[in-house]
Length: 151
Image (tube, rainbow, N blue to C red; front, side, top):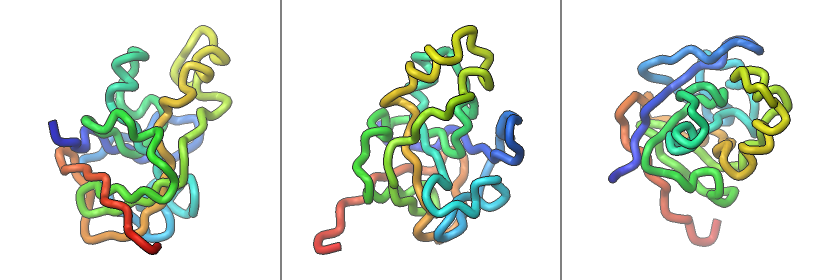
């Protein structure tokens, strides 16, 4: 199966569930336009594979990611510097997205500490937008780009 976008979310306010949207625009050097993390240079966009939700009984957006994809289960472990094309947006992986200290509370877990620990190695990748040729939409393809030699 080819990887594709299955969820797009805007995190507009701290403590609120992200709002699902049909398409997003990237901000070079930052994140997604309209998202509260758009101005950040490092943890601007979080991308999570849908398989994480199946194992936890959650739904896209519950982990406060902006992009939910299907068909890229190893996204969390992609090395820093890896580039990912999502629709018309190119992202650079900065590293694994560490589970925030209050994520368990936000999803209503009975044991927030255990829930946070269960996300280690599974929370997705934190990224920065490095190029924009158009929007990213639900259903668009997702591609891990070949490493550039000499960069």
